[in-house]
Structures are given as structure tokens and as C-alpha cells.
Length: 157
Image (cartoon, rainbow, N blue to C red; front, side, top):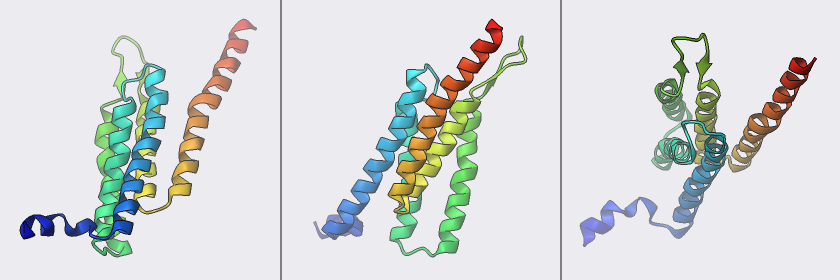
């Protein structure tokens, strides 16, 4: 029993457990909001993918931070996260052979943003992460609507 207690001792204080739990939950929720927008519009990477990306990014920075990592170590972790997410993002980009059209760039950029939001939450910058999520949703919805409207007006002219 003592071994079991030792193995789960990384969250020994209630305050720390609540802080970590809230950060992980917020990362998943914010990622889910961006994923819902993508899924709602029929794109490949949806709610679960975005939630997992944000949660993973938060965990990757939370764990070394809990272990007392300095800024230089956290910087290397973040560099690795940013490089690694590129592989997942590349999988969402498709180029049609019969057309010169590329699809999935916005979804890929959304996953990249979701990663940054997860990192922000993991480091304790919740307000920045919420603001980043709101701006991302604005870009994906309002800017998209505006651009579609301009395109329609141009085609009608």
C-alpha cells in the first residue's frame, strides 16, 4: 500500500490537485471549442482531436513545471511540442491530384493554435488561453463569413 501511495504522490496536496485538474480540464474544453467549430463545418480534425491536442500540450508543460524545471528546460519542451505537432498537422493537409487545390490548411492551423492554447493553460496562463480561443473562433467564423460574403458579391457583379 505504501508503494501505491508513493507512486501517486505527485499530487499530494489538495490545492495542487485542484490546480492541475482545472488546467487539464480547461485545456480540454478550450480545445474542444475549436474542434467543435471544425467538426461542425465538416472538417477532418474535430472535437476529440482538438481536445486531445490541447490536453497533451498542457500535460507536456505541466509535468516538467511540477518537477521544478527552469525556463530553459521548459523552452526546449515547448520547442519539441511545436515541432512535433507539425507531423499531426501535415496529416490533415491534402492536395488533389486532378486539381491544384490544397485542403486542410485551416484545420492544420487550428491544431497548431490548439497546441499553443494547451501550452498556455499548462503554464498557468488561463486568461491568455481563453482570449486566444475566442480570437481563433472569431477568425474561423466571422472572418470566414466576411470572406464568403465578399466572394459572393464579386461573383454576382
